[in-house]
Length: 176
Image (cartoon, rainbow, N blue to C red; front, top):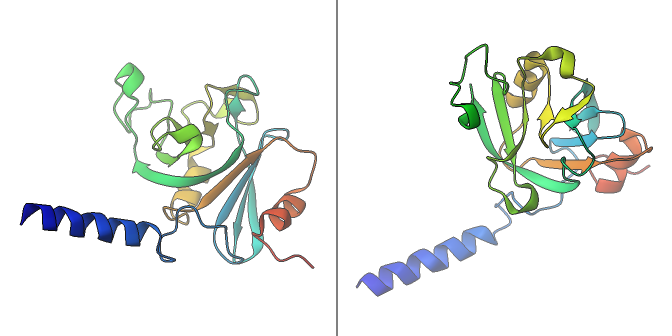
């Protein structure tokens, strides 16, 4: 009996993972929320409904290698994230992660290492300052948090191209 239940769970998990309803791993569809982070300009574009809705300043890695490049998925969302490294509770003014965490699965991680998050140091925004994460002003990350579902694609790149060019290439907005 137990073997049958395990096999059924395995089959259902397999079908769900490869189902068209499963958001992770799909290419973005025009109209879906999509984020592009350009390390060259330290800006983040929020794309929704096939249009660039807003562009925000961000802070990225102290060195180019620290913030990974590629396309990833938002896999974790946290209100008032706890800063485990220094045991600082969420909501504390000393917490460098700010008010929200949008974790993404870069380099095989599970959303707890790399993220888009707020900060307790707004003067760091627009600079190369982090250990790999994307820093935003708290009000900006709160705006995104309310609009970005789990499974949203995040494309991180260092490029001289415009957000519009990059979004068209990734299929987040229509090619004319």
